[in-house]
Structures are given as structure tokens and as C-alpha cells.
Image (cartoon, rainbow, N blue to C red; front, side, top):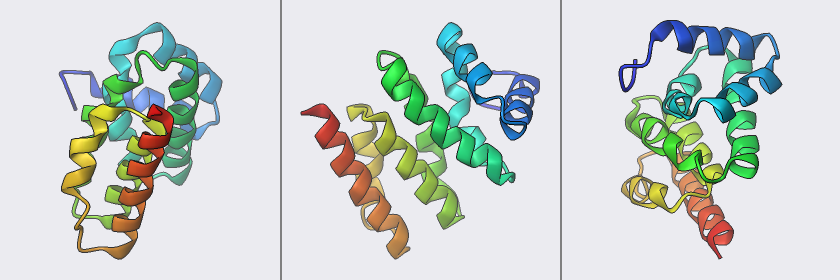
Length: 134
């Protein structure tokens, strides 16, 4: 649980995402910006549909709610320290999608990751943020 957010809410969002209720979840996030802190935890879910749905959520919110997407950065960045390179790569990818310059210091720390794929994703994420910021 991050930032004191109820694990029940996180579980409910993940379950809804697994069932394909992405539009409902997007509306929830747009109406309650405190939910942004949960995005990182969603990419750590064992269910593939939840992880894929999280990427779609971040992509949609970065376009539809750009003023608030930076609120997701700390929660996502926490997973850049995961022992699992897939999770680190997913976190870097999501940070790139946010387009938020707040993600740059976190990504820079991972530029020399032991895993080649993670390093490539980090480079792509940094480029994506630079392009969105220009």
C-alpha cells in the first residue's frame, strides 16, 4: 500500500481492470486524483491484463488529464528498484508514457541497469519525454 491508500481500493481497481472495465477506471482516476499514486502498484500485479490495462490507463490519462499525470510518477518510479527486470522495464515504459519531466531523475538512475532490455526501455522513455516536452 502506498501513501496510505487502502489496499481494498487497489484490489478493486485491479479486479475491474482484469474484467476489462478500463473506461470506468479512467473515469475514477479523472474524478479522484488521489488514485494516481496506485498506478505503480498496478504494474506489479501478477495478472497480465492488469499490467496491460495499466499501460492503457497511463496512455489515456497522459492525453486526457495531462495536468495530473505527474501524480503517478512517484508510485511508478518506486518500481524502478524492483528485483524483477520486467517490472523495472514496465515502470520505465510507463514513466515515458507520462511525458512528465519529473520522471527524468528516476530514469537517469536506471540508465546503467544490468539488464540490456531495461537500459533500452529507459533510453526510449527519456526520448519520449523529451519529444513530448518540446
